[in-house]
Length: 483
Image (tube, rainbow, N blue to C red; front, side, top):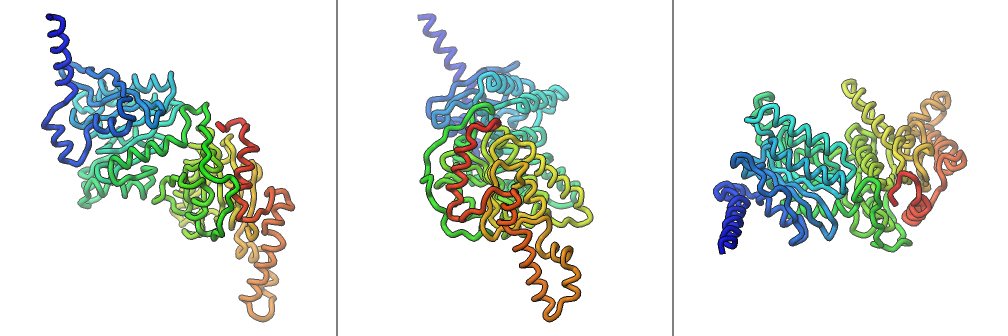
């Protein structure tokens, strides 16, 4: 009997610890936020969560984070959820101890890591020890070979914000998430403006600046997006992602305007599988994770309706980011190009433009994964070199009417036919248009590029998916690919 009573007392004490502070939990819910345990319960498959270091404390002071493992759609994952009801979820030595143990497990027994972020920053009362706590986590995240997905479900300020940015994919809940290096009080003081947390680090602000890949109206939708992202990523950088039949392999593309990037992206992807990343940032290029012929892929699509699809700095960074992600996890990159090349920068943006364009070149040139490119419109200058060039792409196709040139046709005519323009008779505009047509037909059309061996073939637009899927199947064994 004494042993039974002892067990009941222990279990009651454990329940009292795990249930947390009732007043703080009530405040969390009043702020429209779920608790850390509720979040884990909604993210993971029911009954799958196995907690680690559940009762870890020091002098009655608890770590402010819940860690453990479970499954999402029967797939094993690790998860840590910062508990804002304990010291505002601030990072300290004990929180780092729990998170680092989890990350060590992920390193030794690979599975994706999901971070549910809700933290006011760092435990100021711990001084340098707290800053070193963040440093320990940064180091382990940087060395992980498994995917990391961060969900911003409350404040993520200072060091917590940097932890979010180290993730492969960051998702922010619009109703509760705040992602910022400094809070609105500091930024307002520096700028002389009266700014709110939403102004500085709200989901719309972060989406427009490229701070997060995806936003969700609420926490439940953020959990669903995390599960969707997982579908495209492997367990580990050295493992393959399952190929899933999701569409007719022989489906023809409908008639699509080469300038309609949204229709191109959806048309290329298997039905319902395209998940666009960073849609509000670097809009000259659209990027997405998707399946094509059942294969998980990254899609890079020029949007010629935004500044002629130019390689503006943010657009170049956005594309490079996806290519690097795909290269690390062995996912093929499919590029649909319709761009008039590098954006002409003003005098204050020269270095930024060059560095961003070089980063895009470096991503394509340095990646070992499968790269298939289709020139659907213009491929001018570095947009051809980086995204479709024969030295970087495994296979390059072009649609009829594609223009492939070092300069725009208008600029090339000025360089090549300056004398004819000056001495031409009749309507100057008509002469210029005639010379432009001549340049494209003689030098810059897709057939000329194919004749020079700079592309593999000129294909019917409707057949694009079939050609790309055939190339994916042909290249599936390529070193660097996880197919």
